[in-house]
Amino acid sequence: MFAAMRSERVEALHLFSDQQTGLEAVVAIHHTGLGPALGGCRYLAYNSVEDAIADAIRLARGMSYKAALAGLEQGGGKAVILRPPHVANRAALFEAFGRCIESLRGGYITAMDSGTSSADMDCIAQQTGHVTSTTEAGDPSPHTALGVLAGIRAAVRARLGQDSLNGVRITVQGLGNVGYALAQLLHADGAELMVSDLDHGKVRLAEEELGAQPLALEAVYEAPCDIFSPCGLGGAINQRSIGLLRCAAVAGAANNQLVDIDMADQLDARGILYAPDYVINAGGLLHVALTHRGVAHGEIAARVKQIGERLDSVFAQSKAEGRSPAEVADRQAERILYPDSAFLNPLIPA
Image 1 (cartoon, rainbow, N blue to C red):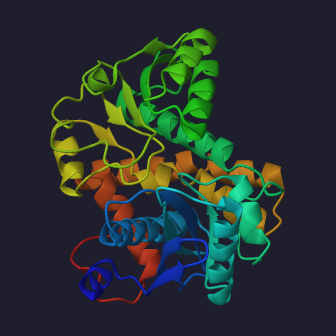
Image 2: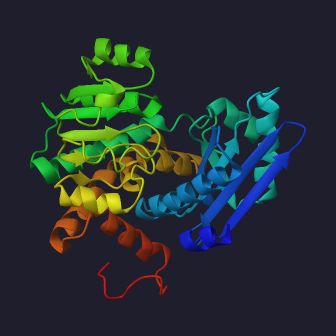
């Protein structure tokens, strides 16, 4: 466990258990040098506690890098609640988790994530003020989708040499809250959509409302397109799928899209532009962080749209230096997070 923490430079790892509600939770705090750690709370079934810890650590690191490049005075953290087979009282379980968050005294602010809802955040808020994505704060999904749209436009500029999305063929993998909102925005911009999701009802809805072409789950990678946009859970780009891709760029909302960082170099070698996930999907973090601070909706939207400019910078530096966009983004984030650290190789430009 400590080896994993050292490897990812995690500051703290907290394990919580509440016998009365059945709560078992992990909170990973990666970095607090810029401000309190902020990151969503997942509520998922895990094969083991070790898997839950590994997920929390990996996601917390991504949140630190995401906050740094989004220009936020926040650190990165992540919580995962191991979903039990049967829950007697979900509200009580999330209230118990709220007490756990309160015990961290503001070191970690939690938010909605996979498997959790605004209603769950409302329950947490009964026990602590260190929570956002409540019903009052609003759903971050629209701002996540807006940021991904800005990122896709940047990828199209860099890879296809055009500003318009009209006629650009885009595959959206996953039609959850973010994926469907993104599909709506892309449709409004004139993109040609192909979509895939485990929920056939969502696929039919996209077909009817957005004129999207449905794709079978097993065919989503090899369908020819300009942009492949993974918007489900992580790990979309792996040893099997990477060889099937027939796209010009990968630009989507999912966290941890690459199973291994080496996938970034493999995409680069194949001439497929990769928009680093924690850069392109930072709109949700901007929403929850700035809403928590009372920033107006219009100002938040303006900050979210700047994601496209950040990716313009990443892509330009990547091309100039012959390094993958993932490596460039990591270096940019690390210069912010660890400005005086020997962790950085001084022979590699920032």
